[in-house]
Image 1 (cartoon, rainbow, N blue to C red):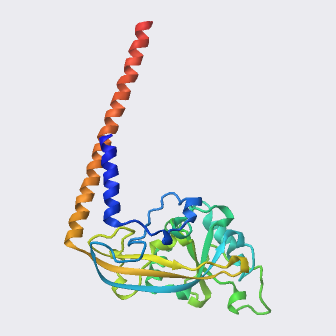
Image 2: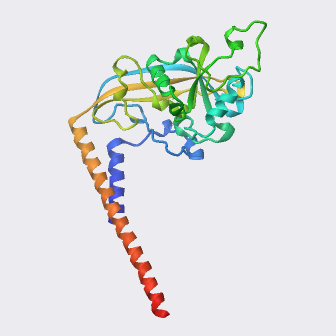
Image 3: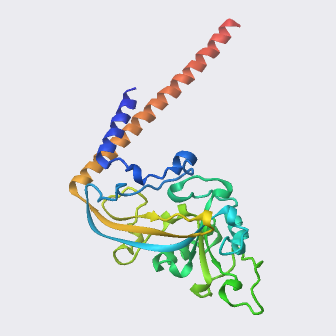
Amino acid sequence: MRVYKMEILSLVAGILLFGMPAAASFNWDITTHGTVSGWRWEKPWPYDNSELMQFTELCRHAVTFPAQQYKFSDLDHAPPAGLAPWADAVRALATGRVYPGSWDGVNVKGNERDVLLVEWKNVPDLARRWIENESSTEEDRSRHFFRVLRKPKALTGGRAGGPRPDEKVGLDEDVLGLPDEEKVFVTAPGELYQFLPLPEAFSDMSQYVASRARETCVVAWPTDHSRALLEEGKKAIKFTIEARLVRETDDGRAARIFWEQHHRELQRQQRKINREQRAASRKGIEKDREASHDEL
């Protein structure tokens, strides 16, 4: 009970320290579908987009990208209404992998899952290099729900005698030598959080942190994304990625270290309680065994 009270106090203190999310920015689909297992990303600054408390903001930058957003139910429709040329590749990509989630990690299922199609030429150079490095071996590729795929010749004007609408693109075709204009990037929205670098002050990938800022680091987040007008057959969206270079203040660092130590102490106490409970359970089992032998 004492540890439980301490956890409640710790939670309240954390809310007071870091602030509550603004309801207007909350993705309410989470209340219906939940988030995917293992989802570890969180918005790294307040939900009202104000500056981080206990940090000095050195600079920030935002870029908006065009994309096409589809549902898995669109896979067999011809472009631009669907992803028919890449349908087999997307299905193969989804097989044996945990879907990383839609925006904010929403755990939609089956044909309601979202897929983004981005022109490769619109992907920033830094992100391209990271994606290419993470796609260099089969082991690397198996960890991610994204792929760089070629466009079918029907969409690049390169096929003589007219387009072939039934042309299929394989998942692991070699696209290294193709021009950027002939490639597309396919990903789940929830995969974007792994590669959000932007130019200049934000180019050092080693400074990026997944969620909670600390010391001097870069934090980034997709701050906005439009909704595809699916009822009108439109797939075009835009999403905005914002990055901030921040430096922790002395007071902020002291507060963070205090709460990290406090959290470790709570974990230590909880482990001790768990050990004591397991020991008591074993003693109870041994007493029951002795009692059964006495009856015999």
